[in-house]
Each structure stands twice: as structure tokens, then as C-alpha cells.
Image (cartoon, rainbow, N blue to C red; front, side):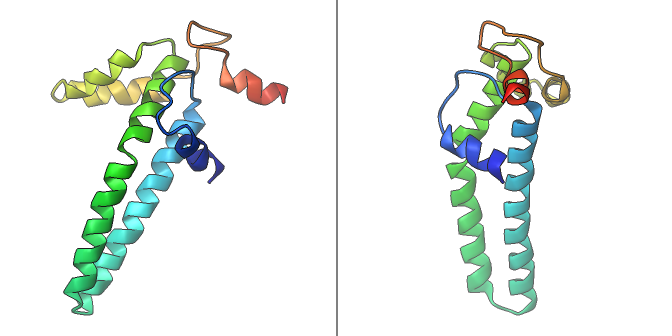
Length: 128
């Protein structure tokens, strides 16, 4: 939960570096929040409460818009952590292979030591 909150505190901070753990924990928490909403939608459909389902869909849309910028920011910081420019995020728009390549970039280990984007957050964490 702390990793999720850390990303939200750095809402539109595209500078610096983000560890793999920070990126993936944010993604996991976001997934679980949306999953819970979809489960609630399923329950409301079974219980024949369409108003609740519509409310959940609206909440999912609002949540998705609310985390759009933090998601982009943590992705760019993650790219910085492996020594790539944030422009590499655009590789997602290449059909088929782009999202596969982006996934590979996101699972790549941190560049050791400091790079042009700052100190290695993994090494800072260990030092504390």
C-alpha cells in the first residue's frame, strides 16, 4: 500500500527514477481496486440492481481518469530507472510488438549506480 501511496504523492512528477517494485505494486493495487468494482458490478447485476452497476461503472471511469497521470509518471520514472528517456513510453503505440517491448522494459532491472536521471532508488533504499 505504501508503494501505491508513494506514486499518488508524486502525482505528476516525471523526474527521477522509480524501482520495479514501485511500478508493479502501483499496477497491482490499481488492478485490485478495479477488480473489486467489477465484482460489485457482478453482484449488483445478479441482485437486479442496475443503478448500482451504473454507479460502479461511473466510479471506474472516474478512477481511471484520476490515475492516468500518476500511471504515466511512474512509467516514465521507471524508464528513467533503466536509463531510457520517457519518450520510450510511446513504443506502446506500435501495434502488437510495442506493448510486448514495453513490458520487457518494465521488468528490466535498474541501471546500477546513478544515471542522468538521478541516483539509483534501490541503492538509496538499502542505505537507509
